[in-house]
Image 1 (cartoon, rainbow over the protein chains, first blue to last red):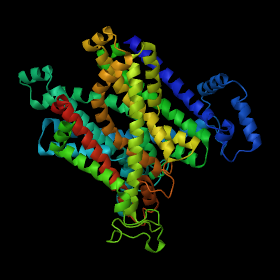
Image 2 (image 1 turned 180 degrees about the horizontal axis):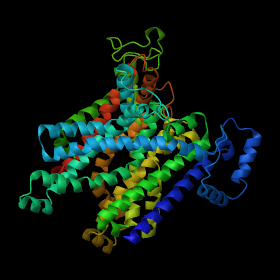
Image 3 (image 1 turned 180 degrees about the vertical axis):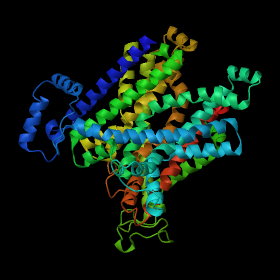
Image 4 (image 1 turned 45 degrees about the vertical axis):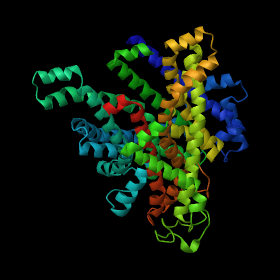
Amino acid sequence: MLIYVLKRIGLGIVIVVLAVSLLFLMIHMVPGDPARILLGPRATPEMIAHLSLKMGLDQPLFVQILKFFGNLLRGDLGMDVITNRPVAEIVFGQLPYTLWLIFTAITGAMIIGIPLGCYSALHRNSILDRITGIISVACITAPAFVVALYSLLIFAVWLRWFPAIGAGERGQFWDQVAHLVMPAFAIGLAWVGYLARLVRSSMLEVLGDNHIRTARAYGLPESTVVYRYALKLAVLPTVTVIGVGMGFLLSAALFTEIVFARPGIGKLIFDSITTRNYPVVMGSVLVSTIMFVISTTLSDLINAWLDPRIRAAL
Amino acid sequence: MKDVIRRVAADPLGLMGLCLVTLMVVSAVLAALIAPYDPIALNIMDRLQGPSWSHFLGTDQLGRDLFSRVLYGGQVALKVALVSTGVSLVIGTVLGMIAGFGPRWFDNVIMLFFDTIRSFPTVMFALATVALVGPSLSTVIIVIIVTQIPTYGRVVRTQTLTIKSSEFIKAEIVMGASTFRILTVHILPNVVGPLLILASMDIPTVIALEAGLSFLGMGVKPPTPSWGSILNDGYTLIRITPWPIIAGSIPLVLVTLGFTFLGESLRDQLDPKLRKSL
């Protein structure tokens, strides 16, 4: 297991290095002066000259990449060209909003999706199972921004049940919760369908296993067999799926934050693009990518811990 | 193939998917004939109208007929779906077959490339690219192609690795068959089935991504109609009229639903094992 853990973490680091290099090269591959591109239209010749010197644009590309990584390791993601604040400070200031939103959405989806999938598996091919199946697919296919728009239209504009924009007043817990409901619903709805289907299929698989048959043969009550033995195993894939699905969650959070004008890393990227604040765009994308790689690595490690066959595959 | 279509049509969900997809393709292709108005023609006098016999889905803030814009928007969605899925399918297949059949080091390099591309959250990668090169439909298509290649490449590689170790391929190699012949005559036909299922299930994601980027103003440029840009208009007018949101979302949801049902039905028909378990 230790060798697998080291190998997988090593692979994760290589992927982060390659991804960061790719982002770095993208800036350099675009026609024009990278310093001018990064600084945008507001740049004065002095600013361009200063950034060119700081980025070491007169040095070979390889040296520039090394320097970039050196800064990255020190937590230096560059400077915001509009407010002149460190990009890292801005990005990490917004990140908790996004993480909180994703956490709420996925927790809500688990609370609804897992029992739904469990019920479908236990009442296979019943009318309710079929209805759940169709609703699950419908939930999965509805893009997050469409769900967000409808939530905004129905619950904020028409019914006025929830506030439409923002994240709520700082320090006012219930106000923040009220502002969180609709964005979390918009992200979580697709996951309700997805988790319901996932739990249903893994539950059906587990229910056919020998140890469940043995438990039944011992005369254990059906509720004990299902909830104590089968469900425990059937929900395990959801942990790994959520890890791999972090990319989708981040993308959905981006749309949702924009629709609800809610602070977060997605809104930061969008606002920075519209103001051509490229260092903030690149810094935010970089942090999101690193977060995504960490979550997929973690989910792979959990998977390998649960299933020894996976360890041999790397 | 005929048999597969017949079996998909016999499955209620498959039939529904097939009908929705056919409806989308036909309405997009025949948009010029069906659309009652020019999708970009302004008619300020008729602006912000609800559905009526003269405007089935109402009009937007510039008086443009939303039904006509939805029909023409289907062309954009169809174009993006076909071009980006087609190109990424071809490149992914070639790279996947080479990775699976070629030397181990080459396999490792390609897999690392796939993993690197997949390490970016798609929408954020798309936005970073758009931020650098500017918004356009071509940029959206290129970004989708790049991010979809690993999906197909990985499936083809796994299939190739499985087939590569089978007896008949070993026999072909002993008989002196060229690598090109083995790949095109023996391996390719065996990977087409799973690829088609994967492609039909990926198309909704591609269409939603294009709509999402256009919704953010990072895709199709105005005044060209796209479902995403109609939704963007709806977002700005949300307190005044719900119709642009309804008009833009209905085709988007129906098409993604159609392709998903079709893909799931295809998978169930082609893989009876899955059918049993799901």
